[in-house]
Length: 401
Image 1 (cartoon, rainbow, N blue to C red):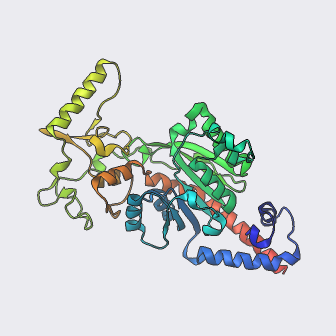
Image 2: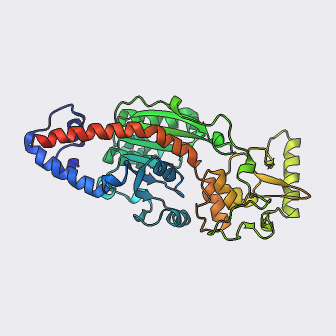
């Protein structure tokens, strides 16, 4: 909007924040720009708030924020197989953008939105990699310390679009990576360079699903709020594995889009291809024994319906070793892709249009959806309060025209 008005972004932000009074001569142009911006974002009557979904994967974060009344207006995901799953579940309300690094002018290419969501990959921050180039004309601020990483692209989109809030998700090791320097850089960028109030916490999805899955969630607001993670509501006791396993007592629900791909309803049993072969089961047992002798903890994770599991990883398709389901008088088996979807808190209405290998990769890279839904619930009142305050300020500006 700043470029439309011929003013700096800082000046326009100060107008909307009420820090300085907008000149009367600029109010008509401001009104026109705001009307165009609202039209670009879609009718407000359809949604409580809008958001964009970056590094979208299969849409686990999106689904959580849709449950809170949000509407997705832009999606970016580079992996074609993930896009196929995403499209199968969310339709084609808008095209999915590919490589986010190719979005060169975010303010022009990305619709106006209230919230930015990004489960960005964690890449090592390397200042040395760009120091030679920067020596000739060193960039300032976050470009200096994060260029060359995908967090840089998140930061430049926040800078250009100035959403009311954002949610960034990553592995918990982001806190300790490079002795804490990586997270310190991220925090400095978000707080000092971009001016957002941030709150972060490592949350284990085990309260919502029968899986240990710790992730750091970083919430940021453009304005000061009383947001607090202490208001995060998690069940005191989480479910056990039996809650997501296929039921062999005849009560397994029929999922039309699955047909009998994972579970044979006529025989009331999981399809045998998910049971480990003798060779693979022998290999995994020998591998675990070898590492036990060395005092290492490496090995398979054998579970029953009364247990919870380790973290599902993107490598699960290789041998399934981190989560093997015990079976009576048979070798253990892998989880089926449908069970993996349930393990991430996704409903059975979620479609799996890709191969088992791709599905395992996708669920292993995804998020625990109920954690996202609870985070969205926690953020929403603050987003709506900011929107209400912004609307009142706009009305005052328009009334002065």
